[in-house]
Image (cartoon, rainbow, N blue to C red; front, side, top):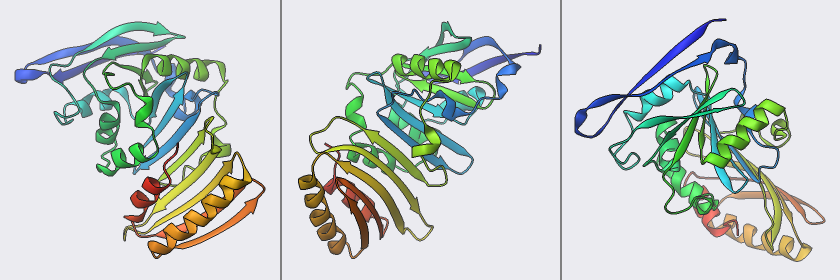
Length: 277
């Protein structure tokens, strides 16, 4: 069996370079898909695609994790290009141990959402969208420790420790999230939310945008009561009308299926107005 040595160099403060990780892993780990590493009990799953790189953000066991279509060596290389606002120098990567045959590394001083935006070359709007979807509330304000795990040669897991362990367990056991049922990988952003809120129980949404800035949103929202469903329809119709956007929907008891098209800036306005509780 062929073994591969990965040696990662990261620049730390003062321009000094140091070896951050020096470990072996087996080339037999090349057949994994990143969607296999999403825990079945995830309450939030989002797929973000930017060109050749995709990321799946998930929330499980009160922890956040990210699965990236990027090799570990490329991931570490990208850290050298990360802004000082994301990486608080000095930064080191240390080996934690292995779990179900996967090696786990640890680093400190990182902002997970900013790091994700940097790795995917996303605009600062990703932070705005994450705030509007209440994703940032899942991260403790003092959280700076991130676990990193290579998934073969073409994938990386990162996130809070509990999230990374849950993701590895999902990939090893096959007890993972029904990804193809809820997530549309052809969309620029596709997400699933299943939470115990007073107003709604589940949301599945797909968002695509064109070079001209036009955005199409297709969503399924399951409310806890027909009263909330009616209020949503009335509010959404008013908001879309104010944005000069089209809005069509179908109602099934407490389930709303709707499609909306509007200018690029409209998505920020929409998510601010319809923030997940």
